[in-house]
Length: 329
Ligand SMILES: Cc1cc2nc3c(=O)[nH]c(=O)nc-3n(C[C@H](O)[C@H](O)[C@H](O)COP(=O)(O)O)c2cc1C
Image (cartoon, rainbow, N blue to C red):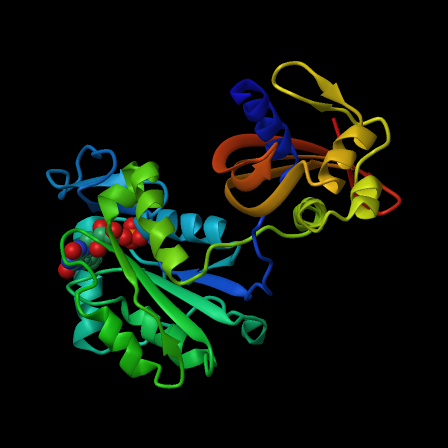
């Protein structure tokens, strides 16, 4: 009995679609200021540099690295804040320039503006900490773009100062925005440890519901999978028949194969009953009209008189035919 039960569960799991909900995704922009060149505690030492004892050369700034991860995980667009007068590559000179900007409460002119700001609902604003503050060019950015009504999320890199009070500074500067809690990551981590960087960013984004969901063809495949799931719960054989290619077989772990008719018959007559499911680690890949979906599915079912909840790996294949994704072996 146990063997058969397990076989049936596996069979069921192979057919379980996702429970992921589709929501209208916000339009996200990831704006950042970051400096390549010499910086503290990272990069490769340059011979002859005055600050070689504590600063190395990097090709891409630490905040730029952090911004790229945020853009990838949110599906947001990237925009780099650049100043008309570029910042010096040399670390010692940069320290001086940053201090001068603070002392004069400067508003460095930006080389480009975000022309389509109206398109965005959410704006991440990223920057390094310079002398305990955000670069003055961030003020220029906030003062020369209309961010009214938008959700603004700060993020920054640093070498020990954390956010250094910049959360409050941004909240005060943008009273007409909803400013969510920002995230600070050490510059060295952002530069050298992408895995840790991602592991810090991911839960922060999830907590704000900013991680991207599936889109386009992936969403269609997901919808097809969900339709199958719902039809199995509803014992809607007509829909199941439509969403499974004719000739699809359902293989038990024991090796026993069932036809569509046999499998659907057991759903219809109450031998197989689906109640609930939970999807984790969903991955959908689409290649033209072919798609594959894999996930880890926890399934609640009553099969052959036994009730239970099981978590199993799932792989399902789909082909798009006449505009509809159809499942098959
Ligand atoms: C001019 C300057 C001043 C800095 N001041 C601070 C500071 O006050 N506190 C701190 O933790 N890090 C400070 N740092 C280190 C930077 O915040 C850190 O290296 C950051 O990751 C640089 O980001 P970026 O590579 O995107 O420019 C400073 C760096 C520079 C260049």
